Amino acid sequence: MNRMTSPRIRPLALALLAAALLAPTLGSAQGFPEKPITFIVPFAAGSATDQLARAIAQGVTLESKQSVVIDNKPGANAFIGAQAAKAAKADGYTVFITTNTTHAANEHLFKRLPYDPVKDYEPVTALGRGGQIMVVNPSLPVNSVADFIKLAKAQPGKLSFGSGSSSSRTAGELFKQMTGTYIVNIPYRSNPPAVTDLIGGQIDMMITDMATGLPQVKAGKLKALGVSTKKRSPLAPEVPTIDEAGVKGYEMTYWFAAYVPAGTPAPVIARLNKLLVGAAHSSTAANFYQSTGTEIFTSTAEELRKFQVAESLKWGRIIKSAGIEAE
View 1: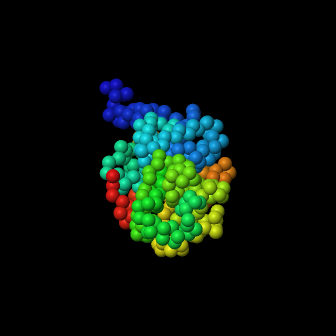
View 2: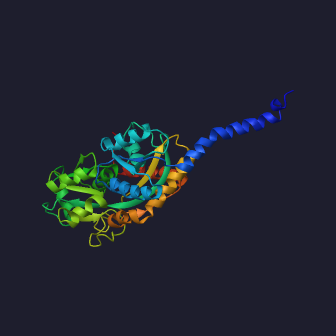
View 3: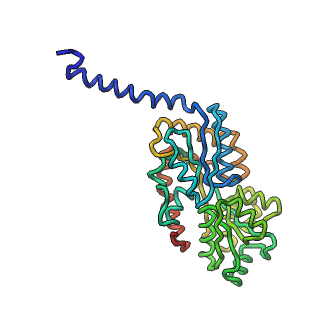
C-alpha cells in the first residue's frame, strides 16, 4: 500500500488542505484594508449619523492609511441605505453606519421590511448614543413645553411636527400620547431638510438629534423648549428636560452603530472593530462627540448583537405605548 494513502496519513493531509484553504481568509484580514472603504449612511449629509460617519472616517484613514468614502443614501425611512448595505459584497469594504432607526425601531413601525435587521447584517461595534432636543419656529407664540401643550390643545390638528428618522418620529408620537395632544406628523427623508422647513415655517415643531437642532438654536433660527433625556444637556444647561417641564416620565434617546453585510469573515469584522473603536476614541472624533453631546459608546461585535436584541424589545414597547400602528 502506498504510504501517502494510508488511513493514518489521510486525516493529516485533509487538515493541511483545510488550513491551506483558510489561509487566504486569514491573510486578507491581516492585511486589511488594502483599498478604500465605503461607509453607507442611510441619512442625508449634515445629519447626526453623517457627521459621526465623517468623524470616524478620519480616524480610520489615519490608522489604516486607506481613504474612506461616505455614501449617503437617505429616504424611505432609511430603507434605501439598508438595502444598499445588505446587497454589498461581504468583504469588509462596505460598512453600514446606522442607528436604532434601521436596527431596532423600523421592524415595529412597518409590517414589512425590505431587509432583516438581524439576518442580513453582522454587527461590528456600537459607536455612540445621545438625546434629542424639542425645537419650534421662533414665530410660534410659545416659550415653554407647557405653552406648546396649551396651544396644541387649543388647536387640535392645526400644529405639525417633522420627523426624518424613526427616533424623531417616535419622540413626537410619544409626546402626543403623553400630553393628550393631536399634532400632525410630516415625514421627511432625513432630519436636516425637516429642520430647514421648520426654520422656514412650513412645520411648527421637531424633536430632533442635538447635532442637527442645537446649532440652529445657537444661531437664533430656532427656539428650544426641552431636551429628551432625564438630565439637562451640558451643551444647553438653560434648556429644561421635557420631563421636568411637565411631561413626567418622558425620555427618548438614540444610538449609532456599525454593521457589515451577512457573511463577512470574522477576522475582517475583528479588524474593523479595532479600527472603528479606535477611531471613536481618537482626537479626530472628539469634536463630534463633544459638540453634539453624544456619549462615546463602543462594544465588541457580540455585545452589539445582544444590545440590539434588548433595544428592539425596548423600542417595540415605546412604539406600542405611543399608539403608533405599523404601516
